[in-house]
Image (tube, rainbow, N blue to C red; front, side, top):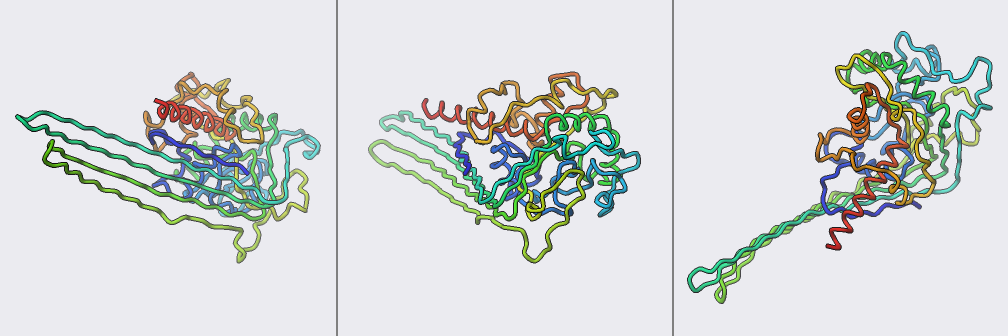
Length: 391
């Protein structure tokens, strides 16, 4: 079982996950489980078409579901790339990291790990703000005083239970090769945005899948509550002491759902170029996904990949969640959300940071990197909260 418990002393830092609108269940769920470092947590794990596999290209919709467009490792004419009018645009050439005739299964394209039984992930936060003031002044023979106080708290929590788990991860060598392929075909992805998606999403919304965690069955849930208190008082020494207060507690009903839907058939699988063990065929619900995202500097004629941002070596993320992982990451210059547009996602924040700190015109970020940054931000906020409490 993995868990996260954190008390924040203010709510200025906002780790946005890219889901627009108010913080609904999908947003709360993703914010709280992103910390675990397995990738983006999917509030709706059921595939929209085929079972998710590495190489899939798509985006995440407002319900936390990955919407698959096509697979970049399959040919344009492959049946899996001709469904739902989302076929690759003209000029598409698939990502083929191996020479012709080579056996994909013997080149360690993927790391595949499986576990049987239940897995549980939880996360919760407590955000609070408070202010108080008082004043007094003599008025002839009387001592007059007034006071004011305000406090506000918000509680969020999320949980995921998954049973019978299989995890796919593209190995570092081929993940980096995919990143280079993405950059080299930048104009093609712009065509996807304009011609296929009709500018419904932006370039940075595209996700090139390098790994996913699939399960046989799942349950997800979130909880949200707000508490506020306001008080004023007046004192006249020796005569009267009057105070008024107002308290409000608002609790949203817990949101939860489970799957897969017993009334729907299992989603079809793609004809992937690596070997799939048939005993895992029903592990087809994607609870976590990870991949590359790309962003281009606006109004720039050049396209250069920053040497340290893109297909770079990331710190190894151990299987166990440990706050110590955040200590090795320097985020002193990381742009905080209160200094920027909160509609930006944490992915945009990271890529904008790379653009601001370099002359690069194209940058990439990966969910493995985002998971570590999320841990670092959370750890720093925890230290800040402890310091204020001690003071």
